[in-house]
Image (tube, rainbow, N blue to C red):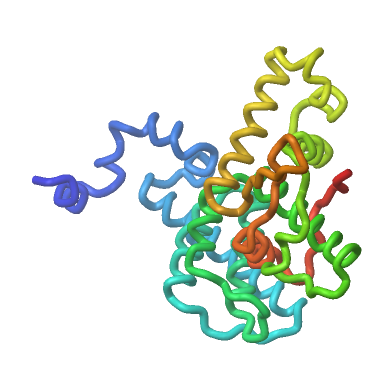
Length: 254
């Protein structure tokens, strides 16, 4: 018999018993706390996370003062699927905000089908960094370009600086293990194991945000190093994953 037939015949508990130790290691604390079979525990975990998602969406829409409308299945189903296995509470909040914004009939930007897929591919650190970059762009649009609206198609007017500027922002947001002063003193600390780990995490975060089309680097004749910009996609993605009533963690760029 195939695995599915075996499972139906002997039941999930007996079927998974030879792998009970492995299941506990893979499933972590929730498997031990629930004391259920692997299949049941997974379902209960997913249901509990989905329920919490809906509770958050209900609170977000109520606080924002709008009645949620129907969400397209190609947006709704990926959100429900991925959010039900999200174990990072900060990222779970972003899934709730994304669903709430998708249900807002008065939203000013489109919730694209690519947004759920992008959200599955970024870490909490990367999301926090991108949030702060978007806020920097909004702040400088209002300050230096008061004649244009704060919108994704004008984000190109504001550069974020070089990778060193982003490294300072990354450290100021406390996304690194080491303080800003240590990370920026590359000549002195650059080859230490701790600094190497921080630099690697930072570089991978930036590479991933660029890979996903949320940031881009532009080489200019006036500057020896490429300047970083948030893309129109990155700008709207941040707004889509931000609760309309929330205040995100931000650090000033120089």
